[in-house]
Amino acid sequence: MELGLAGRRALVTGAGKGIGRSTVQALHAAGVQVVAVSRTQSDLDSLVRECPGVKPVCVDLGDWEATERALAGVGPIDLLVNNAAVALLQPFLEVTKEACDISFNVNMRAVIQVSQIVARGLIARGTPGSIVNVSSQASQRALTNHSIYCATKGAMDMLTKVLALELGPHKVSPLGCLPSHSQCAQGSPAHLADPHVSHAQIRVNAVNPTVVMTPMGKANWSDPQKAKTMLDRIPLGRFAEVENVVDSILFLLSDQSSMTTGSTIPVDGGFLAT
Image 1 (cartoon, rainbow, N blue to C red):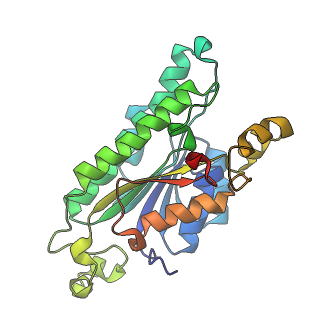
Image 2: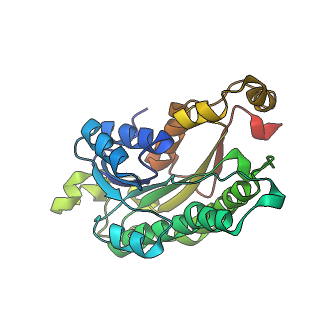
């Protein structure tokens, strides 16, 4: 399936490792100009070596003011993947204020802030866009020692729906164009003949993976007994590979999902069906 993403500009948070890094690599391979955001400079340095042309931005998204400064000069963005997150696991009776503050600042507040920055730009330019939030099956199922993580991901799912409700009515302006047509930047009227332009709006969706076999996922679920307790609840009997999640993200970013917004898409092997 041709996703038609070439020529667009994307911003990916949590881009240094795991799902975020693989998303940057896939977008770069598809001809997308990518702004990669991470708090770890060494991860960004190696990513740029792998994907020349990617624009790195090193910032802690838990710092509102620093994020505002860091993203002020990234230029127009058409596609956003809110992937950055922390998972601080504690029994409920031992949850600390620090864990609450860090988790909500990164997993929720930063999503609001970065989405505001991107959405305001889209509206000001009169161009369509797509935002994908990387949530979790933990948004909809209780998991032991995950009270704060589950709460932040549950909040992300509802934020996704509210953003879809509020941003969807912003249609592309008569002089706007689909970012996939690079000619538009030079003033070409090619977009006027595009059959999708009347449906070009701002869409917001989420993907909700199960355990994903990133290096961190493999380390955290390497104990066979621990893994069995989760695998027994997954009808397909396996954890997700990174590309399973990335494929869903790319679909939601593309015009192939032009009628999909406000959705939370499970990538969980059936976990949420049980």
